[in-house]
Length: 177
Image (tube, rainbow, N blue to C red):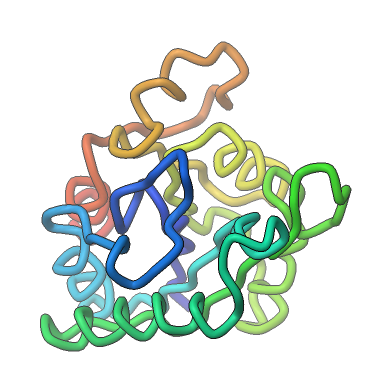
């Protein structure tokens, strides 16, 4: 099975230090939706693994998160793409859960849902915690330089085997060629 795991904020859509709290605030990064459609057309299943601490902080509720994802799904469908499954951690960092990246709970749930090993499965993210979760789960860490990516690229804790691309479109081009 061909599977790709994506982070959301900073990879698919523009991120915000104040969190993405409404569908109006969710704006796709240029080329990201077409890149997901290209993954779909190349036979990849696409799963989302996203930390959403804004839920735990009370900045938005499940209805709002669902509305944000509905907007994402609608815009993806307009370019012939889709996301097969969305996995999210609603907890704050100080909740010490097992699902918040860099822990691997979300990734383990994805592996179970798709009945596959994560060995060599690409995980595309923009933050150190995305890359650390990928490495810990046996997936392939891929950094995009959108969102927090440029800052993350300079972090000495970045896994050594991390592949780096300017954005999701470039990462997908490398995966499908």
